[in-house]
Structure formats: C-alpha cells, structure tokens
Length: 315
Image 1 (cartoon, rainbow, N blue to C red):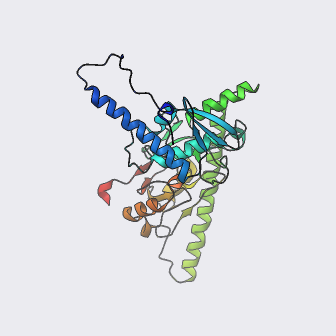
Image 2: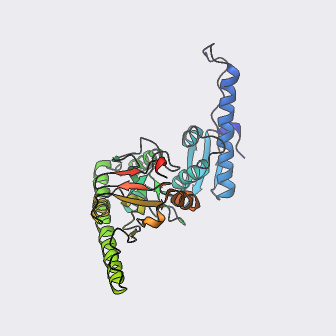
C-alpha cells in the first residue's frame, strides 16, 4: 500500500554511528518500525475506510475539509514505541487521521470541549496535550473535539500537530490562532457547569430511589446502597465529568463517607452501584467498549479533590 518513500528513510551509510552499537540492530529496529507504521496505516485505510494515499514525504488524507498532507515522521510519532500487536495502535491512528481529514479552523469555535483521558490510553496524545492533571493520577485533562468528525459521536483529542495546522490555516486566511488561555477558561467553565448539572440529576435520581424504597417498605436501604448513574452533559462525557469538582464533591459526600467507589468503563456512562464496581466486572465492561469510547479499565476512588485508580491488589 505505502511505498518506502512514504516512511522514515533508513540511516545513511555515511552517517557516523557509535561503534559500540551493532549496525544490524539499528537497521532492524528502523525496518521494524517502518513495517509497523505501514501495516497500521493499511489497516486503517482498508478496515476503517479512511481515505489516504502515499506521497513522496508521507501521506495525504481526504475528507470533508479537503486534502491534507501529513509527514511520515508525524505518523511514526503517533504510533510511538508500541509493539506490533498493540491493540491501541489502530484506533489511535484512526482517530488522528480522521481528525486531520475532517476538522477545520472553524470547528474550534463550535466543537471545542474539555476532555479527560487516562495517561497512556489509546487516544492520549502525550504530555504536550495535557492542560491540567486531576489529583490522584487517574486522569489528564486537555482540549477535545465533540461532533467535529462526521458520522462519529466519539470525542477526539485536539492533537498538538492538528492544533498547529489549524492555527496556520487560520492565520493564512487572515484570522488569528486559537487563544489557548481564553479557550481553556471557557472549557473549564463548561466543565464546572456540566458537573453541577450532573450532580443535580444524580441527586434527583437518588431521592427518587429513596422514595421508592420507602414506598416498598425497604427504607433501610440508604444512599450507600443506591445506584447512582451519570451520563454525558453539555458535551462532557462521563469520564470527563469526573474531572469536575462539583460532581466529585457530590459523589464523595452523598453517602456521608467522603469517599466513593466509581466505575467508568465507558465514556457514555459511570455508576456507583456497589454490586457492579468489582474490578473484574469493570475491566470486562471496558474491554467490551469501542476503543474510542473506553473510559477506565478499573474502578476509581473519588474524593472531593482526587480521582485515583483502585489498587490492583484490592481486587
């Protein structure tokens, strides 16, 4: 599918190398990486119907926004040091390519949202993308796009190279690059508003459940046993809502303990039902979710200030 010219060139024979490093090992590593990227791009093109063609310096993607050339080095950086059998490689490349094919500078004024991602997850662009870390280590927060890719309801991170390209296009058209600080303040305000709304909805649901238990003569089942479900609000998915202080406060304080075990295996929903937050159940639900919609593979402990993964030894 892709010619060798569309991928990083092999090291020059004239280049000086450390004589303590075996040249065969260096060449084999480079060849393996080239083959991995070519294979992954072919899979995305054929299996995910992403329109791309090789060019002299990389590849070209086509979409509603027109054609955009991407360098082979950029594709290699997206794959990173992942192994050939890593299941994250294909969804990661697919998300990146679709974003470049579809997103225009105008999308930044319409579809920009806060987005939470687990460090090391398939769609996490890396440290350059992170605007804020949620205490506890389970979540990083940065810019995302929701609804910008036609035919997909999955969020996409605002990949750093995509942001750079969009800013260049905006300036070339006589506009201005994205004001990151102002945009981030707006994103955080949206997140806090979404968190308050999610908390109010959860509170109403909790009260309704308590009333039902009372009518059934089961008043002993208090809030600690109730099922609390939270879903996307205002373009903020369930995982991103955990980065909201209002929702964390409500979750932590609702049963009077200041600590809540929460499961968010999918970006579409999270819950606190103690009967369904067992680590094995959460991991199975996570594995059954589409890669673009996956949340956290293990339950998390939520306090007013932190979101931390439940230690593996607990399960």
